[in-house]
Length: 441
Image 1: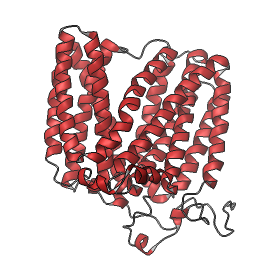
Image 2: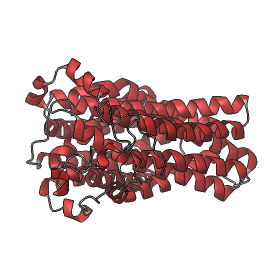
Image 3: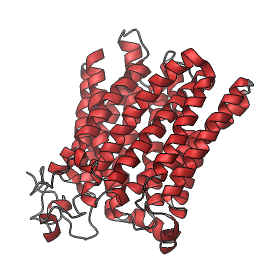
Image 4: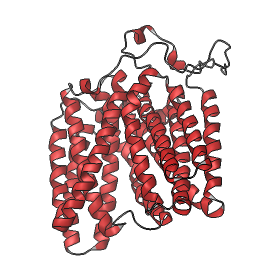
C-alpha cells in the first residue's frame, strides 16, 4: 500500500500485525460488579425512555408524524438543552464526588422527579412539567457521564471496547423496552405511568448501591487540577479521538438532514422522511455496536477511523446517484454503522488515556463535542437544503467525508514527532501478553 508517513518505512496497516486477545462479552458478565452496573443502567434507562415518552405526549411531539423540518428542529432543541446546561457540569460532578454515590443519589433524585411529574400532570401545570422535564434530562446527562467514567474501574483496559459495546447495546435495548412500555402504560393508565418510572429509578439506585468496586471520583480529583485536566485534551490520542468523532458526527448530521428531506421530496414512502431516517440510523448504530469489539480486535484505531469516513463517503455518493427508498435507507445504515464503530473505539481511547481524577471532565468534553457537532450538523443540513438542493448538500458531505479520510490519515496519533501512521500496530512486550492498554488507547 502507498506510504504516507514522514518516515519512509512507516505505512498504513489494514489489519493489526498481531490480533488482540479476543474478549467475549459473556466473559465480562463474570465480573459481579460489571453485571450490577449493566443491570442498574438498563433499569435506569428503561425508566428514562418510559418517562421521556410520557413527557413527549404532552410537551413535545406525540408521534413521529408531521413535517420533517419541524421534527428535526424539535429533536435539536430537545437534545441541545441538557447538553448545554448539564454537559459541562456533568464532568465536574463526576470527578468531584464519588461516582457510586452520584449514581445512587442521582437515581433517587430521578425517582422524586417522576413523582413530582405525576402531580404536575394531575394539576395540569404545563410550566411545572417543562421544568421537571428539563431537570430530568440534566440529571440523566450527569448520570451518563458518571457511568461512562466508571467503566474503566469495572474492567481491565484491554476489555474497554467490549465493555463499552455491551453498555451501548444495553442502552439501545433498554430504550426500546422503555418506549414500548411507556406507550402501553400511557394508553391504559395515563399519567400514572410516571409511578412506574419512579419505581424503576428507585430500583436502579438500590442496584448501584450494591456495587462494591470503587468507581473513582471524590478524593482522587485533588490530584488533577483543571489546568492539568484541560491539557489532556491536547494529548495526541485524545485529540485524535475527539476530532475524528466530532467531524464524522457533524457530517452525519448534515447527511441525515439532506437524506430525510430527499426522502420527503423525491420518494413517495407514505411516512415522514425523519421517521425513516431515524429508524435506519437506529439499525445501523445497533449493528455497529455489536461489531465494534471484533473490528477493533482486528484493525488499528486509525484504520477504523479512515474506513468510517471512506464508507460514509461512498454511501452518500450512492444515495445521490440512485435516489430511491432502499438506497437512501441503506446509505443511512452504512453511515450510522461506520460512526458507531468509530464512536465505541473513541470512547475506549478517551477512557483509557484520561489521568485518574479527570476522566469525568475529559469524557464530558468529548461527549459534548461530538453530540453538539451532530446537532449543529442537523441544523446546517436543514438550512443548506432550503438554499440549495438536498442533492447538492449530500454531495458536499460526501466530498468532505472523503477529505476526512486524508486528514486523519496524516494527523498524528502519537506524541512522537516521527510517528507511525498506525502507531498502535507496533507490538510491545506487554502487548504480546495480550494485556496492554496500548491496543485500547
